[in-house]
Image (cartoon, rainbow, N blue to C red; front, side, top):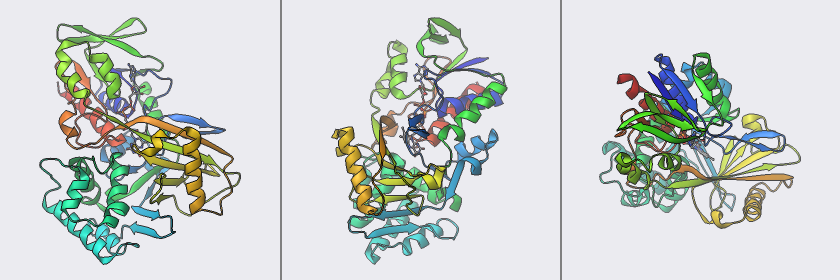
Length: 434
Ligand SMILES: Cc1cc2nc3c(=O)[nH]c(=O)nc-3n(C[C@H](O)[C@H](O)[C@H](O)COP(=O)(O)OP(=O)(O)OC[C@H]3O[C@@H](n4cnc5c(N)ncnc54)[C@H](O)[C@@H]3O)c2cc1C
């Protein structure tokens, strides 16, 4: 059996590793000159940085197991921290929640009880909401916007602004007014109601390539797999309703199975003229993408947040990461804005100026940065909007031998690295079972 994988993002690579482990020959074609897909490298002066700060969770079980499977040592590429959210507002007041030392979910409850910046009412409404979520089996039928769900649970303004909203935008990259409660509850369940370590945060201490794509490439090539960079697939070759291969650079590459592990907009281009795939095309057209914006700032001397990252309330900037503490990039901070918003209408100069000022307002002792770089990823993730799960396509397709993988498929999970890995692995499993 020969499998061709289109796309070398985390989904395509996860599928390739899984297939190879089952002695199936794999060729992976990647359009760009680097692996990693949406998680790619950029140059900032002399530093090579990721196109955006990525955070993983202890609950990303498939991803962590996959890394272990190909001998990536977690502590050599990731820093594991307890859930520790600190938000500063313009008046210098702050909200601080850090999970306690007890087993899950008591660690969350003790964290809430001792959270700074919450009144008794804020705490009790959040506790009540968590109990209701658990009693409902983390299910909501039909799906509703998260904001509406939280209103029903009587959440205070502060609980929404300081806890639910930051969690929602960070996990789903989707505004709370439109976010899917169904998807949100799935992550809350997996992160907070399994083991305590599931709620821990994992931050890369090297670039993302080192966390999986680079070792995956070595693993694939050492096991007779073939990876071709700079090879865009232009079309699919079918015979009747069966796949026969792909066309890339005017050459046909034959295959019994083809996995399209490209992002939804690229998958759409490859399949839109194939009649039998019309129902899939219709579903794909309903998928929307949302941005993530990152500003890297270089300071003339080392600056420190005294913690790995901090949140800003009431600002365009949502989170600021201390790259020195995380990756050893001295004097560099990364400011992140997830999701859409007014910042999308600002020019690069305007937005860079606004973020720089917001950081200076919170940390007046910092010198002015000497260099900034704004990275706008307009299609960073799909929108995890209410009802979206109904429009997420399955790995299987009506064309025999054609499969779909990617963070946008029907995983029930938000559009994340873990979602991409789960999808790629599931696709591989289906092929193996066939
Ligand atoms: C700035 C930013 C921050 C993020 N933060 C987080 C985070 O904190 N935590 C988290 O879990 N996730 C985060 N994400 C989301 C995460 O990066 C994505 O969910 C994940 O990378 C998607 O992987 P994928 O393999 O499904 O798709 P992609 O990464 O889109 O991979 C698809 C690949 O297919 C290739 N391709 C497309 N068309 C063709 C073709 N015709 N021929 C050959 N190749 C083709 C593309 O070049 C690409 O390499 C973030 C994303 C961004 C951009």
